[in-house]
Amino acid sequence: MTWHVVIAGGTGEVGRQLLALMADRPDLSVRALVRRPGSLPAAANVEEVPFDYEDASAYGPLFSPPCDLLLLALGTTRAKAGSDEAFLRVDRDYPLRLISALAAAHPDARVGLVSSVGADRARGLYLGAKAAVEEELAAQGLAHVIARPSFLRSDRSEFRPLEVFINRLIAPIWLALGRGLFPRSRGWWRWAPVHVREVAAALLGAALTLEPGQRRILEGLDLHPGSVARWGRP
Image 1: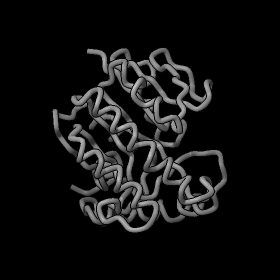
Image 2 (image 1 turned 135 degrees about the horizontal axis):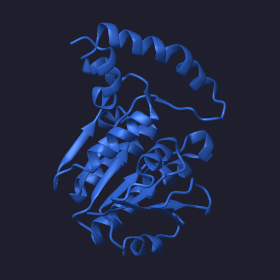
Image 3 (image 1 turned 90 degrees about the vertical axis):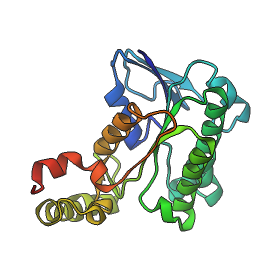
């Protein structure tokens, strides 16, 4: 069986990891939505699809071809977006439109969503946007898996002082304590920093094994299986 996959947000940190995991897999045929062609590394099974998220008429035709799985890794920051409205368009409105169009065209399709820890108790702009997308998935009845990572670690070249501080100081201490003292504590691992490659691997693996109508939430230990298996005590 060939899986027909659409991914939105493939140029982001988690999205790039998802594409790397899917690259050259003969069982996956991937269409990656991009604003500009040439944005992504080349792969034999990945087709770049220029897409204007602002064009409401573009969403229906996007799902005229088959789609078995929609991966949503869209995201920005309030600072980059420049305003609350611009932020909400990327983190809330675009995913909502994609989900609605997919449900109308392929109600048996599956969705994999990158959300955030705390989206189940949403407060504020960021978590409110994530919660709205999660609620839409449930309302549409599509089988879906939601990854709710805490602070995302990555190897991005862009210098971000807070990320450098957490990656180099906070994360190693937090993970070492968790492995040594709290290897099975769901509360500890729920808030543990997690690398984008672990999030991508967990999300893709779960999305490809979903049952019809199933809903899965990946948090904490679900996103740190390698670390806990290697370092945690039995």
